Length: 92
Length: 158
Length: 94
Picture: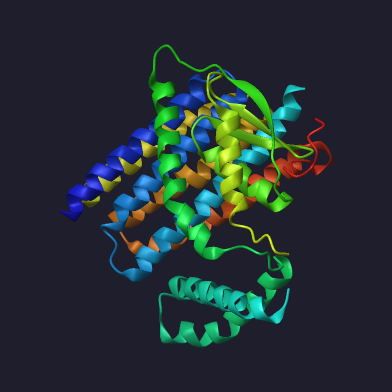
């Protein structure tokens, strides 16, 4: 049961990672590309971590998975704003 | 900041940092002993670097499901657009004035950047510069709604 | 399960390689800074998969990588813009 859950969620995660890459390559301007990278890749990581939680070997691993997720979310929110602002400078 | 609100705040920080330490050290006895020193030290540093703001932790927690749900929708939305052969995006900019303290604006910016179709590129005075993936979106309303949500996390009786 | 996780890690690495093409070709500085975000999401994802496939002890690498990704993004922005701009709280006078 846990394995089925893991396979489904990690497959979905991969789909979003690939979507992030496709968006990053196809979208015509820097800010749109940033949308793709920030949102799709973060959802990918989130689903991946959820899927891996079913495989965790104890509460410490579970805690570290959650910690990684929280750190990545904070990093993504901050980085997206900073890079978006820099791109604004590039454009003008 | 008076003594009445200081004690629970200190308790919350000690509990969070203690939990973090337990996770990082794997709950071993040696780790706990070291933690008796590191956790109070980290707590002191956190109070120095991030002075107590009037944030309501329970309300922050209550917002987590909504945030996760919206970022799920955000990811699906952008993935759909990336895979669509016609590439249905029509990017544009909008300035949205928000009445939030500076820290609240940054939190709002981070949140909006993970939500469907919006990306924040800093602020201009008190207005947020929001990039939207599709001109047709109702961005202003959505931003104002999020700003109102963030505002409820901050104590008003300073 | 570990075979599946190794397979996922491989495909994820290929996807990262595709994204790195954008970092390599730019054209703007901001496109290149996205490398920091890629490490924070894709790189962390690969390490987590390897940890799940082999030894969970590797998860510490993922924790540190996620932490460093945040600092890397801030450092990139500060280093590559004049006057170290990039604070979202500054007025965006561009």
